[in-house]
Length: 514
Ligand code: NAD
Image (cartoon, rainbow, N blue to C red):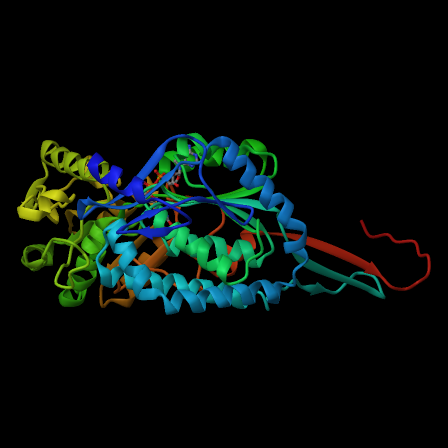
């Protein structure tokens, strides 16, 4: 990374997220105060479309900082728990209003920091804001149930109560929507939060927290700890005050978080990677399928957990459909996502770019046929970013690494099939199970597939990507463990159910109920 840029920004760095030229100098947010991290390690985020553009920098949090944040959340918990849920919801509603007002500015910052094209960043702002709104409304609906008792003059009911201090650990690829869909239910349910975002996207995380504070969140209710997961990750799971962990990220880190949290016997949900197939059946509307496969495979530069990374296509339409895909791929303009003409932004950083290129080499070595793309793009100004061609492989076999492993880049693996059972076994022959799609006009095929695919989400005649606030989101197998996110399920994860037995006879009575 260009160290000269680092010096320029340091000389001007000040305050909480204050814009210094084009670079933001950021701080941790602990107990309602913006504080410098104490790890002594500076962390810098660069624009992946132009690494001469430093977006933000901060001193990473130490374990002591993380501990302080947990203690601040612990201190704030009793009052926040007592705050009526509708009132907690109203603070979220106010935040949603501010997010809407600042949508375009925040979307531009997201494109600059994460690299996704501006229209996708605006879409993420809209999606995240809808999620905040949905959970704001849950403040009025945090209901238990009543039940008939076996005994006369008795009332049985359940209460939903908060857990206490919860850790929220998030990845870089949805820097607004994922914090929104985790933190909003945690808060409205009455928990206090320690939020650790990925170090590649600190600016968006700071904006998110600033806006919640501006909306009226009391000090200590939401704390921000930014730093290397390897140094502050464990304490956010293992500290005795942490009552639950909600994690989204890679399978390797997720499994570790799950093991540590499981050993403590606390609630944990881990949403992890995907290797999502789109099936194009012999009777599919090929134009519809084309739109969905292009969006799924190359949208967000393939850096979505729900990205379409496998195309399983019926032999009868395979040649025709593959030509349609490659013709479309060759039209994609690659570059800085702030330019509205651009269809594909950069990989998020050098490491992800290398991963993409390594998987392309693995595909070739394993014997798959490279149909288009496959190279880094370094023409002119693009040499300053982490750009890669959208890539398609044909003849990919289940034994190939690019069929089984998550690439997290714009690389589509194509496999041809002749029968439904062959197709289904390919869909399910994978360690991941997040989402999948099928394009067909045959209702029987679609419904059978929806029953039999081993995934958390099925799309019929729509791309593998996406989710909606009011329905559960998440995967099975290596893609997810724990409760689903979004919807009521996402809210319930952050609550404990208490059953209350009330006898109002007012007289002593022997009971034979056990
Ligand atoms: P990552 O696992 O490297 O990091 C995720 C978060 O965990 C970051 O905040 C990181 O700092 C933190 N972390 C790292 N080490 C830790 C440790 N030892 N203890 C606790 N926390 C630690 O993932 P990433 O590269 O940021 O994100 C990409 C991955 O996220 C992909 O695999 C993608 O599929 C997945 N993802 C899944 C979903 C979903 O809902 N299923 C959504 C988006 C992304």
